Amino acid sequence: MAAIAHPIPTTRAWHSTLMPALAVLAVLAGLWLVSAGPSDAPSRGDAQVNRLVRWQDAQRDWLLVADRSSHELVVYDARTGAPLQRLGADDGLGEVDSIARAGDRLLVQGGEGPAKVLTLPDLHAAGLAAR
Image (cartoon, rainbow, N blue to C red; front, side, top):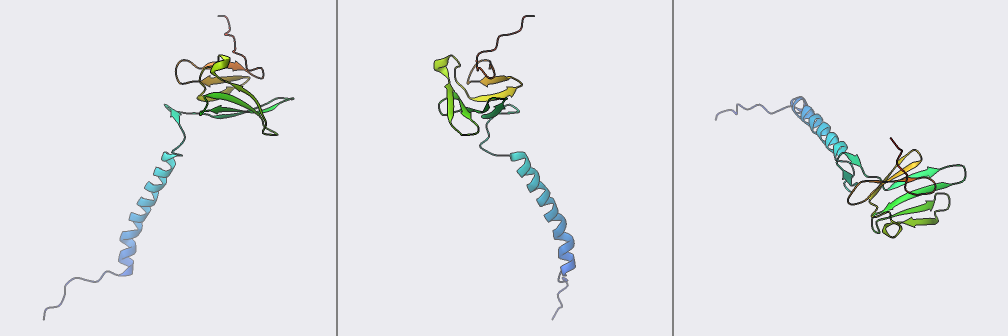
């Protein structure tokens, strides 16, 4: 009978072949997880859409929420969780889909058109500075 000419791989041979492949798979999986991010986070282009902004001064501690189900801006007392105010289309604000804070201003973006700018804490439309 003829002898088999194929050598049986040793454990060392498996390690030298398998370990680099596993390392490459681990790196690719990590990059995929980091780049994927949360799947339910909406975005506009490259910017992350905010639905929650905290604002506080000496008298107030507020959580401002873009309620996407009603398309309203809802203001809550951050200490108690009590709702303080709701603003939306009936108040002249239009639809509210996302919000962002810029100092003492709140930028409110709806479905269409430019963002509206509200002053904090009175939540009135900010006037544009004269040029």
